[in-house]
Image (cartoon, rainbow, N blue to C red):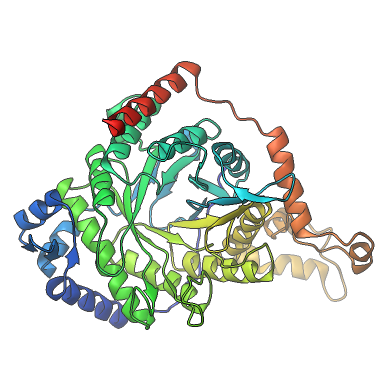
Amino acid sequence: MRIAGLTDRRISLNVLDDADIRKIHAATVQVLEEVGVRFPLPKALDLFEAHGARVDRGTGIVRIPGRVLEQALATAPPAWTLAALDPDLDLPLDGRSTYLGTDGCGVEIIDAVTGERRRSTLQDVADVARVADALDGIGFHWTALSAQDCPADTRSLHEILAIWNVSRKHLQTETIVNEREARAAVEMAAAVAGGRDQLRRRPILSLTQCTISPLAHDRGSLEAGLVAAEAGLPIGYMTMASCASTGPSTVAGSLVVGNAEVLSALALMQMAAPGCPVYYAAAQTTMDLRTGAYTGGGPEDHLFAAATSVLSDFYKVPLSMGAFATGAKEPDWQCALDNALAAFAAAVNGADMLLGAGLLHGSRILAYEMLVMDAEIWSVVRHLCRGIEVNDETLALAAIRDVGPGGNFLAHRHTKTHMRDLWLPQILDRRPFSVWAEKRDGARQWALEKARTILRDHRPEPLAEPLQRELKRIIERAAVTRAA
């Protein structure tokens, strides 16, 4: 398999000019210096204080001078690779490439056989990963669902083992949220990679943590991030600041709040482990003004996607962007609108990782047909972002002369050479109306059937039995540590 990523982007969407970026950066620095961010972890306070930040031990609020922030971020590497168990599936984050992944922590699934909406299980985690493994549009995994039939204190570890057992693609997770889990996950990843040194050279696991908007962090997430940074695993912090609730009602203001949260965490990681791979992560939206709920779609989301891509480039770190976070309850026109526009807005401006394939209702419910349909949306976005290549060959003057007025290009050698450059749908319906009218089926049914076929036939080779036993022992030891 070859991952279908976007590596030859030719177009861009200018939502922020250089002056806008400088204003957002200046406002962010002002917030960090004057308002500060809460870090409820003594080790974090010690690191900040040692590097020249002003620390209030009573409140846990850290005020970070601009020079301290810039010195810390200067050690972050601008490019690195999401390593896969199969090196042929590695994903270089080089500032020129974009890849699509699943999303995290869905709690329900629409059963592929019965159509029932039910709570997710560990078997669902593995099954969804198998379908994602078979789709070339899916470049990497997030732990897409919560294994709610596993003990809560080791659930995240069971989930990553289930995914490694069915796929050789890179695994990124947001469910490792405390130091105990992080140390066990690092130990597991090292066992799979062949040792800690090999893991540092080829990090097959990356961790995402969420900030607490506005302007705060979770203790466990900070502890987990520091463990990852120490081990050389890529670590990102995701803001989900929402306009009019956990962020100002303006997009620019919420960008400042989210920017301060993410940059403060990335600076801490660099202070602890200079040069460790870090990434900017974001899934910002707006509060629904009628209900107060998370929206998961709308023009502000698309502006956030485009703007955050530009900001992460300004700070020279890769970006993981929640782009397929539709609020739709089923695979319908709303989810297609949400996901297509958000994916385009993020990809066209250079987001490195896009998240969310397969999830509905604000990342709560997974539908197999949605996973396949999102891969199709991604193929359209990839093709669009490549723009139009203009050169002697693509201008086709020789072919135009050969065919002449009233001719046809179908049999010309130029057509044979370039016809496969044209986009072809896998599940979009281009049949004659009469054929559709007779069958009355379409993309949703075809996508579900494709997912069912993968579930039936795609059986990747699992990890070797001795390695599986070792990973399970690590999980058991983590459970004992929790109990103690």
